Image 1 (tube, protein in one colour):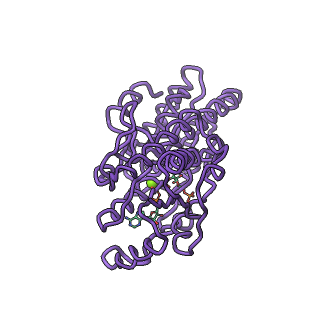
Image 2 (cartoon, rainbow, N blue to C red):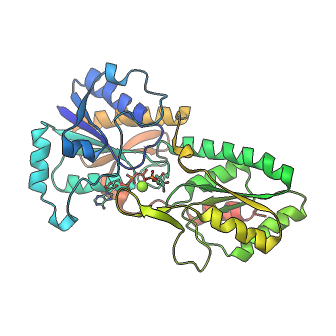
Length: 344
Ligand SMILES: Nc1ncnc2c1ncn2[C@@H]1O[C@H](COP(=O)(O)OP(=O)(O)OP(=O)(O)O)[C@@H](O)[C@H]1O
Ligand SMILES: O=P(O)(O)OC[C@H]1O[C@](O)(CO)[C@@H](O)[C@@H]1O
Ligand SMILES: [Mg+2]
């Protein structure tokens, strides 16, 4: 059995641990031959590969980023209806591959599902700091991003308190508010603004003012995909991402002067950015990623194609890819309601 490993989408702490887990199980236990593609589909297109074996993954469990590289380079050069899947399968055969392990978020696993539907033997490994992928309770990288964001909240709080300022922290997450919700809860934020539930500026200002009236300084956590009630799209930056989508970001910088004008309270914005994706994974993410890699190698051995190695409770289960990518996993209303009652 010859298995190709490929990462796509943004990097996510734990990816190295997942590749290590899959390689140790796949090569040493099951006797597979394994190969990694450099920089995702770019390496597949350009023929850039590295052999994966025990020495190649030595010491990687706690290392951030991903040594193979990742990218948003598209797997197909045409729109889906026009993709030549015979040519794609022929390319897979050129590499001598029997199977693919695809490490990525909802976009990557959508590609995995499409490939499975067209006869490519694939297993998905769910990663993303956004935690927006179905079929798994948590994706590795999320816990690390939340830890970094909650540390940022703790730090912003002390300077905010010293100056009696309102501090607004923008975190990532694309169209899902998971990082904002969990980091905001961990840091005791007085308002958490998520893409799933727009709020009016008046309401945000009311929360900030009530915090001041209690003699405290407000900490507002905002997800990059949040929009004020009535706005028809999220705030974007110039340029497109590698897949041609608008880049999210900038909502904190837009909100801060509006809050200051609406409350009379000096307000500052911080955009956490890629810091929340960098550095060493937490122990939780290392364990989750390693177990995901092990489960994926076992799934290859059993030929459980078209599945994703997802965390369900305390177990890694193989979930049909189609089920996992059917819809984005966003913050449900009850999770938002339980924190919103205490805002302000
Ligand atoms: N529907 C699709 N059809 C074809 N290719 C897709 C599709 N969705 C995603 N892709 C490809 O997969 C890549 C990875 O997807 P995406 O950029 O959404 O990241 P992801 O896997 O969701 O990870 P993350 O959200 O953590 O960055 C895209 O950049 C694009 O090349
Ligand atoms: O690394 P890039 O291409 O700037 O992408 C940033 C995006 O990737 C993520 O970090 C992961 O999907 C999102 O939270 C964010 O919107
Ligand atoms: Mg995604």
